[in-house]
Structures are given as C-alpha cells and as structure tokens.
Length: 256
Image 1 (tube, rainbow, N blue to C red):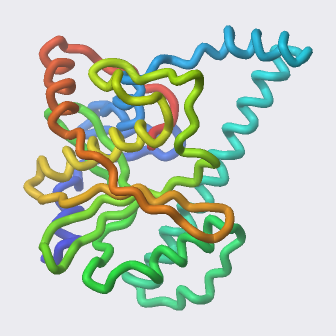
Image 2: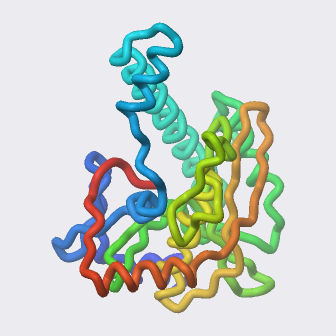
C-alpha cells in the first residue's frame, strides 16, 4: 500500500455532506474544525455593529447587513472556485498525469496556484489533496487542502490555500478568547489554530508532521507562504477539558 492509500484508509469511515457541510462517523455528527476555532473567538455582533455603521454612514441597517452577507458569499464562492482550480491542477499534474497545462487560470489567485506548484522543491511531493480527517476521541473533523510529504525527512507538511483580501485584518486591536487572548483576533491566527487542529488529526494516526503552511494566494499572481505556529499541545488540553465537561459544540455554518 502506498502512502496516499494508507492515509486515506485511516479515515475511510468518515462521511461528508457538501451541501450541509456536515461530517458524520457511524451516524454520529462530528464538529467541523471551524466551529472548534470559533469557540476561541468573540462572536461578531452583527446587529449592534451594523446599526452603528448604518447610523454613521446614513444607510439602512437591513441594507448594510445584506451587503455584508452578499460580500461574504461572493468571497466564499470565489475561494471555492480557486480551491477547485488548485485541486484539479495538482491532480492532473501529479496523480493523473494529465495535461495540467491545458487549464487556463481565470484570476490572479489561480495564476498563483500554478506558481506555487512550479516552485515546490522536488523533494517535497503532494500525497493527498482535500484530505478529510476526523477524531473519534475529540469528536471533530476537517478537510486539509494539501498534504505534502518531505522525501528527505520522511515527515509530512499540511498546507492550505487562502484567498482573503487581508489575512491580518483586525478590528480595534481585539484579541481572541482564552487561552489565546494574547493573540489578535484576525484570520491569520484563526488559520494557525485550524492547521494545528488538522495536525492533531493526522498525528492521532501515527503520522509525523514537520510543518503547517498557509499559502496566501494574491490577485497579482504571486503568493506568500507562512509556516504557522504549532498550537497542538494547548488545543489538546482545551479539547480534553471540553470532553470532560461533556460540552458539545453546536454544528452551524460552513467549515474550513
């Protein structure tokens, strides 16, 4: 059995419904990684903030909320499109040996995807794309965009594409919730936790992860790559506490 098949076999009992973005294992719902991350983030006060914004800019509050929701949906749809392009490009290039050069990028972010794969060192190879993982112990699941294998160190690298306009956007120096209250509440820090949660899932199955990498795809066709901090020890303590308290994270919204 090769590395890719071996890894996929570990999670063969996981079911994923794309429409509702729900994960199940033997008919038991599992919490998406995004919901775990959101337990360390202050809930956005849509009503209060939209009301103040509407008054300040002389706008209708419902229109403001609709504009925000529409913008969020457009960003989500665009991110999905770029992710799909990245998966198809890498699949053709590495797994199906198809003509990946026939894929024409339609945005700078898709050009950045091609640039990323062109610049990937030869000793680092993709082994699984869109890897769906879960933990029965902690009751959560998630999907990593890319799992890479370092043929020199014999260890794995978890990588995820991001298409945000600004991954370091923060409002009024707000921080995350304990035990991460020393970190600014911004997408980059959310993603650091996200990748560490993926790492826990992979390491539970005995695989060694040497790095987690965030690939920020930019409109100009370039990308920025960040090796994120390892928060697995703190997160496992928090997950264990939730397990002991029999706390359940309600399934809502889409996951990462």
